[in-house]
Amino acid sequence: MLELIMKPWPWYVSGPLIGLTVPLLLLLGNKMLGISSSLRHTCAAVLPANIPFLQYNWKEEAWNLFFAFGMIIGGFIGGVLLNNGEPVNISPETVRDIEALGIHSFNGLIPSDVYSWSALFTLQGFVVIVLGAFMIGFGSRYAGGCTSGHAIMGLSSLQFASLITVIFFFIGGLLMTWVIAPWIYSFL
Amino acid sequence: MKNIKFIVIGAVFGLVLTKTEAVSWFRIQEMFRFQSFHMYGIIGSAIVVGMISIFIIRKLDAKAINGEEIIIPDKKLNKGSIIGGTIFGMGWALAGACPGPLYALLGAGYPVILVSILSALAGTWVYSRYRLKLPH
Image (cartoon, rainbow over all chains, first blue to last red; front, side, top):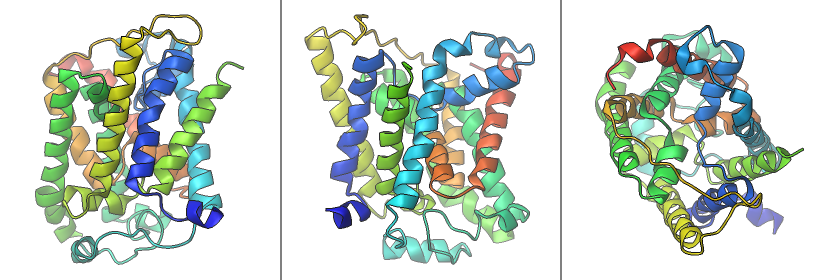
């Protein structure tokens, strides 16, 4: 049993479990799944700076910060305690494409070539770690949500705005993967 | 402590995302290259289960555990859905993660992700600061 849990979980196990957080949060707390809001609440709590968009009672939304804290614990259980030490089982085509970008570390969940303290001070690490995350924070708030709030919660509740937003998430992702990232990596 | 349940649900959510490798930069690269069904299976089946659940909640007129009526507000479509959505998508592909996975990765033993989280906070703050000047 433990051996089975230590292995990567297939999509047909994880996907439905992820979907169940939607009714669980609604029934147990009357809350809507959405993770990027935690970034806004943290800004409102730490550095509101008289910005109107950050002037609200973030404490009323504190559940979202507890949820985010729980995710860190979940990551520890899954990524440290239940880690089987094997590299992520991506397709051979993806391995080939990633190597073509100049990335050769395939151990762990993220490549140490770009995600490490030493890489942070290289142009490549800076672009991925700092610029990529900045766009995530900026874009998710501009779009009114991220993958959880729009793709899972929004599409589950049949929201047209979420459908359009998710389509543009993918347009942005494809543009980056196929056009911009190869160009960026060619300089690094 | 009424917030303990949210820590527990968050922990299960983070555990599932981590064990199914949805937090992996490699899986996001694979997804945007259409080289595996894995991520599409996760997102697709999560949406189907969420959709059926909400349908049942609405059909039964189920209340939350505290007796409150469950109301799901409409999300508004505006230019942010298009511009912000595209920027988010580019960040998702470049960083190989979205906000949830950033938290999970921090716990999974990648302390450098703390820099990513601080940068995502900076992005949210800058959006908030210049919100009124941006097209919506």
